[in-house]
Image (cartoon, rainbow, N blue to C red):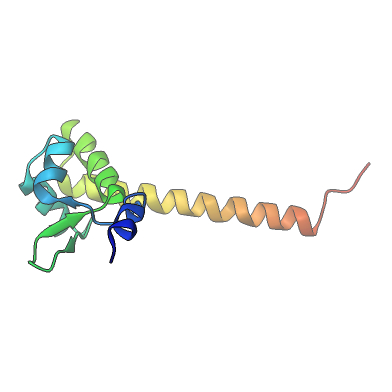
Length: 112
């Protein structure tokens, strides 16, 4: 990969650009918190060739939401479940909106 290719990937939300230490620093948390999110299968960091955890911006947003819930007193297990359910709800709403648009296009409302 050339340097130009690497710079282009920095705009990719799924590119694992952040080390565990940097991710923890950005979130204002500890590496142990990030490991716990992995243990609860909320986020699964990719591994570098040396076996070090690497996080994407998308994963950091999820971790930030988990931290917000934990800071409000939610146990980490419950926070992880809440985030999964929030994600499922968002996906269901997106699918419903697509279905509504497709239905309206196929069957426009009758003019009175």
